[in-house]
Length: 549
Image (cartoon, rainbow, N blue to C red; front, side):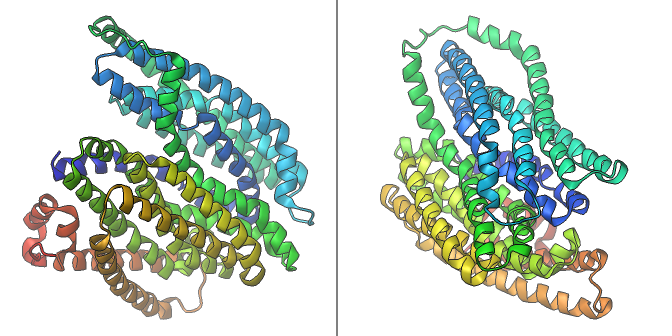
C-alpha cells in the first residue's frame, strides 16, 4: 500500500468518526447554560457507570464483528459471517438485558459511593434516579452497535455514520429541548432536567436502531444473494471457537473504550471524599463537575481525532506485521506517532495557553474552571498517545500489554488521587491522571520497541521539533491575548472572551501552519502528495522548504 493511500484512507475514516464525536460534544455549551456547573456533576454521576457497563456489555464485539466478517467475506465464506452475526446478536441482546438489570438494581450503591457521607448539593435519591434512567439505553445500544459492525464488515460505512449522526441529533434535541422546557417553562428542578437529559440516551438509541433496520431491510436482498452465490465450503469451526476468535479481536477495543471511563470512575468515587476530608466540601461537586464534565468535553475534541485515527490503524498495521514487512511496519508506526503529535500537541498547548478565556467563552467566567483547564489540557496529549500505542500493540498481536498498561495506570491514578488531592485539591486529580497515563505510555512504548523492533529516535526528534513550533505558536498566542486585553478592560463577558479565543486560535493555527510548511515539517510527516497540493496553492507565498531530515 502506498503512503498516500494509507494516509488518505485512514484520514477519511478518521474525519468521519471525528464528525460524529464532535456532534456529541457541542451540546455541552448550551447545556451548561441551562443546568450550570453542579448539574454537570449530576449528569456525570449517571454517565460514568453507564459507560463502563456499556463497554462491558458490548465487550468490543461490534468492532470485532466488523473485522471478523471482513475476514470471512474475503474468503468467500458468507455463511460463516452470517452465522457469527446471528450468534453475536443473541449475545448482545442477553448482555444488554443483564447489564441493564444489574445497573438498575445497583444504582443506589453507586450513588452512595459517589457522594460519600458528606452533605453535598445532590442527593443519593437524585443520583439513583439518574443512573436508573440512563440504564435503559443498555437495552438497545449493544444490538444497534452489532448491526453497525455487521455493515462495516461488508465495507459499508453509510449505515454506521448516518445512524450515529441521527442518534446524536435526537439525543441533543431531547437533551436541550427537554432541559429547556423543564427549567424555563415548567420551572422544574435541575435534577428533573438531568433526568430527561439522561433518558434521551434511550430514545436516541431507538432512533438509531430504527435507521439501521431500514438499511437492513433495503440491503438484505443483496446480502442474501451473496449468501446464495457462495462457492466455498462454510467453515466447520464450532460457534464456541468462533466466539473465541471474536473475543481475541474484541479485547483491545475494550481496553481503548474503557480507559477514560475507568479513570473517571476513580475520580467519581474518590474526588468528593477527598475534598470533604480536606474541608472543601462546599466546592467539591462544582470542582468535580468542572474537571470531569465541562473541561473534559473541551479537551476531548482534539483527543477524539486521535482516538478515531488509532482505531483505523489496526488492520493496516496487522497486515504489515503478518506479512513480516518490517520496513513498511516501521514506517507506518513512525508516521502514526508523528501525525498524532503534529495534530494534538499544538491543539492541547493552545487550549492550555488560552484556558481562562476559553472556559469563559463557553461556560462563563470561572477562576477554578480556567485553572483546571490550563492543567488538564496538556494531559489530553497523553490520552491520545495511549489510544495510539494500544492500537499499535493490537496490530502487532501484543494486546495483553495494553491491558497491563491500563491496570498500571488505573492503580497509579487511584493512589495519586488519595495523595495529591489532599495537597493540590482539583489540580491533584489532574496530576494523578497525567501520572497514570504517562507510566502506561512508557510501558507500552517499551513493548512496541521490543516486539516491533521499533526505534523511537526519529519519533522523539519529531516530537521535539513539534514542541518547538508549538512553543513559538504559544508565545504569539499569549501576545495576542495580552494585546487584546486593554480593548476589553476587566470585562469577563463571554463575548469578550470569545473574541480573544477566536483571534488567538486563528492566528495560532496560521503561525503553526506557516512554520510547519517553511521548516519542511509538514512534508516530512505527511509526504510529498500533500506538499504538492500546497505548492499549487501557496507555494510562491510560503516558499516551501525541500524535504530533509
